[in-house]
Length: 495
Length: 137
Image (cartoon, rainbow over all chains, first blue to last red):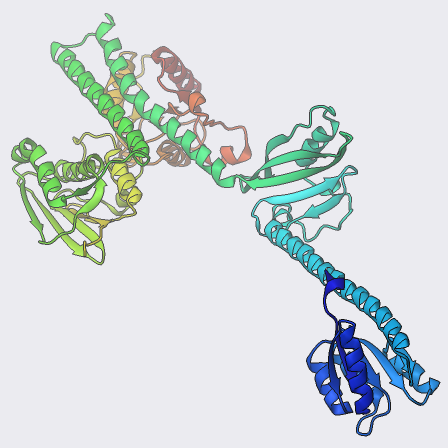
């Protein structure tokens, strides 16, 4: 405890006998005493170490005691200083207390007088130390609070969701920059009636929370189009802040940007529309032929009958293929979550894919060359997906090829990518066809592709797979000359 | 049908099966039919065959190929001289709606009617008869 600690006392006096005598006296009383026999020594000791109490003689040969007092207090304002003067000069004593001395004692003084004064000085010293401690703590506390507040502000100002807190009078209490951005406002004044400046759907939502029953304490959410034409769509959530009486003290409004989500929803429903359109067409065609076949009022030749039946079968085949491709497309999406990654040898995979098409190649008399550079790294991927990728590409190269045509496949390793190029000397594409190449259901329709069947999904499946491996596709093509498709798949050499 | 020579209908659709079926159906109702498989071909055939009316599928090489061809035909012979009916399955269920209720639509949709696919052949023939009768008067 502070009161049990041995107090350090400094005596500054040029009267050696008095110095030593006082020292002995105080040491007997349990003080720890240091002495200085002149002013400069006194300043030196008193400023270097923080003494609890300093007893300073005012009249000294080299430096005035007041100066010593001043210097010690400058260095250690909490040292309790007592000045001693043999002149009983009250002006000097008062001067000393003005500078900061605790008290003065006229010389000569008795031991009792000194000890009594020292006792008071000790008490004063304890108070000073306590005060210093509390001041320091208070400063630290304030700093902590300021830091927390800054931290909180930094967090609130950094979040991308818009935040608005209103009180029970619908006046603004707190908000962040994101909110200003969403509402396209330059500024909000604290305590302004902000609800009047809000989008009507948003104010309705807020009013819903206010009017909800006390017991409910429910949050309300709504999707609100803040800017027309889908430019800014937000999900607004309003939550009540309830005080301990159960009364609403205010509402916290959070705005979350869902514009992209809405765009994706739109794309999805457009895709569904397209799919149903593509599925209906073959069914309508088959239905049409069946109608003609079953209607007695039509005079159809036997030849026509056979043709109708064959064509119907062809459309049904196409429909089944399309459904399979659609299932593949959705499987690819699922695969992204449940891939089985292996170290794949692409050379082997591509050779297998070519094998699959042996009959088709023979039928059109197409020659295939495959050159792979040696030392190709393995590709980390799902066997089924990568297999499908090359099957689709090689299948296309055969489908859109001419009789006696060629297919040239090369593979090399270039700046961390495995590059596979598949070239055919087939039909090629017109520039406008190339633009739509990877669109779902797109199929080139010109006189050279008339008899080629397909679903239009093969290449969009290819693109999906390549994208999901963070790869790239490049297409070069010239109508009636041929096409080169280059696939870039990231792979790293083993060290 | 009047005793005049058979009216000629231009039929444009990229679905060759549908083209064949509809041709048989319409010819069975006393018309002559010439066909084309896309907008470009349709325009060529229109110019050489000079049909009395046109039935055009909407989505062919472009999403609105039908509208484009219809526009060209109407510009060539404005008014109800060559009745043009657009056929499409992209209505109702898909949420697409075409019509001539707004100024913008009236500006670029130049056809006499938009009919839903699959067409009921009797309805189609009835409409054709109606438009061609109007034209005759």
